[in-house]
Amino acid sequence: MKNFQFTRLGFLALFFAVSTFPAPTSAQSTKTSGEGYTAYSLPAKHPGPLSAPTFIAVLLGGHGDVDEATRDLCAHSGGGDLVVLRATGEDDYNNEFHDVCPGNSVTTLVITSRDGAGAKFVAERIHTAHAIFIAGGDQSNYVRFWTGTPVQEEINAAMARGVPIGGISAGLAVQGQFVFTSMIDTITTPEAFADPYGPLVTLSRDFLNEPGLRGIITDSHFSQRDRMGRSIAFMSRIIQDGWATSVHAIGIDETTAVVLEPNGHAKVLGKGAAYFMTLDHKPEQCEYRKPLTVRGVEILRVHAGPDATFDFNTWTSPTGRPLFGNVVAGVGMITD
Image (tube, rainbow, N blue to C red; front, side):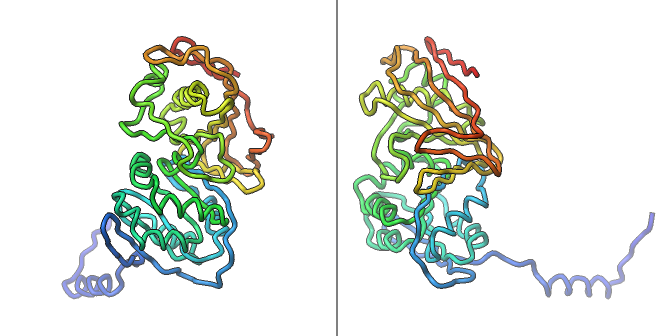
């Protein structure tokens, strides 16, 4: 073994060499605060000429972003400001989007109350956005703070004029026509099976008018948190309550994305799978304080990959694996 010794002069030389060349730091956002909101703004790294945005929907299952899906969101933005919406936290996403999408400026709006959702500054930032991204957290905050406010109006207006939108985890949960709002707390599959009308099964509809996601409820962290069963319970409730005669659900694994184009064609990216589910009939038993019974739920499992696609028009996939879900007296089974 060799022994290394530093003279005092050599140590000082090394110290000053390291001190002279510090590690690069992340870009710093400019912070602006108002009643019920805080904004963090970061200019584009490499700004270019603006063009009109074109719509896509980016649906992320949580726990990690998918760079290709992020690039798709920014590519459809036409440059300009990418607005991140959240109810807690700070500007964590700013540097990530700054690096992956150097042509976009990034503004994170942390909206912590209905006052913040009614602020003129917040509405104007969403109104001028070229892309919108809804962060994770707790979707009940989004439903509580945004419903009936300019934030909800401006998001819907932005999508209608072609602004692309993405969401992850709780942000994914609010993208469908039907939403598990988690107003009291989350719910597990066994709890939803045991009582589909229990107090934790809180559902709403028409929170956002996202193109391509009518008649659909979404769920995240899908395989990792065993959420297929609770999605079946949500679908059963939607039909039992007369909100629809047929309903679809999309469950997305962590570090996985579904990217939906306006023509209804989608690709599945990342490391996991997406599950596309259909219930087109009433459950046999879906009542208060009684275990769920519903049979014949159709499921297509599409694993992410270069050729993984899904057609929302026909609800089919050339690479999908068909499965069937049955729940009898609160006990679920998935079969080929």
